[in-house]
Length: 463
Ligand code: SF4
Ligand code: SF4
Image 1 (cartoon, protein in one colour):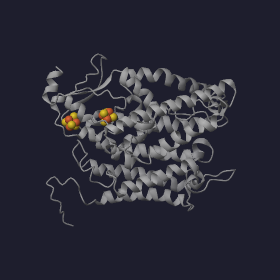
Image 2 (cartoon, helix red, strand yellow):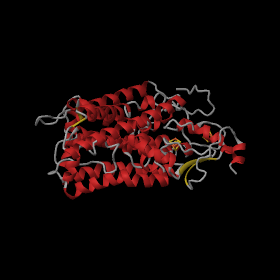
Image 3 (cartoon, rainbow, N blue to C red):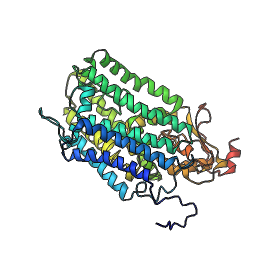
Image 4 (cartoon, rainbow, N blue to C red):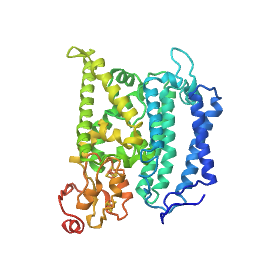
């Protein structure tokens, strides 16, 4: 077909070549196997599970290589506002609805995914994952095992795509490798293997980097008891979990900002950075969104503190009520439903294609709020801006998944010290003028409000 585009740069190709078709075919086969299992069509899990997972992984790798390696390394955010996937078009809505539905099933209707209850065997999608679950844990797959496996697959396969896309930037390459390995080992393989080795003990912890208050059940009485009764490993989890929150996080955040967690090791951040990359530009840059963000995220942190205080009070006093009200009914259960499931999962990931990839991290994560307080007031981290070089192209603001209007700071030559910045570094990676630099330095002059100067004036004022 003749190419009728009048664009002299023709950024959008309208054909896919043979190898790309094969890659798309592989991904489709992998997804089709998952869909057929979901529809309860019985497949030999020993054959079809590896086939499905490897087809998706291989297809994504081949497709990404075809797409990105034929272009020169460099900024690739062309046409993001014209594609269906990245600009809330039909593809985006379809993915959003599918993801949202999947989260609703996982949290509230796992039986529809085939989870066997009351001694019944798994069927459907859950049964497809049984062999792998038996391999690691010696028991049938739970919905969380299915979820964890697919989650890890998303981060590793789309992490590879991310590395190719941002391969001109060393920070992005190293950061994404760490994100992928953190998910694969710390969040998936190590906990699954430990669970298999401690199958006689009650569940006490999963991801060793998932700390309170993100892990909101950490101080639940059942969880504390399970850790206390979990032998040496259980005690390590208990002590590590408390130290990670109370000591490690403030210290590391002081030195490098919250990026060490939010953009390098966190599972939620990992998914947002890799699978969510196509949607990062959708975050609202409005001042009203910024205001809402501050009330919302600190409100959730307060909610988490109150809920955990009530739970701990009950644990130490051996009671189940507080102020005459049942703690579980009045505060613990609402928190789990509203924040732990509906916000972090259903909205946080299901709405990626509509609201951007960091809705949860920006508006809801109590751990991000906690680290944000250190980052804003007591940290060496900042993004410096060489305002005189800024051409106001807006690439940086467009790519900021946290809704920060980076350009406004760059135009004024003002350091960015926002509590919400997750230090992903994409603003810097997509800046064509090298204006932005993520730095850890002296706290003196870190906050340099510069209300009106523009362009070259900024450079002079900063000298
Ligand atoms: S300001 Fe830059 S580093 Fe911070 S979240 Fe936005 S894009 Fe990432
Ligand atoms: S800082 Fe860089 S990316 Fe942002 S507006 Fe200026 S030139 Fe463009």
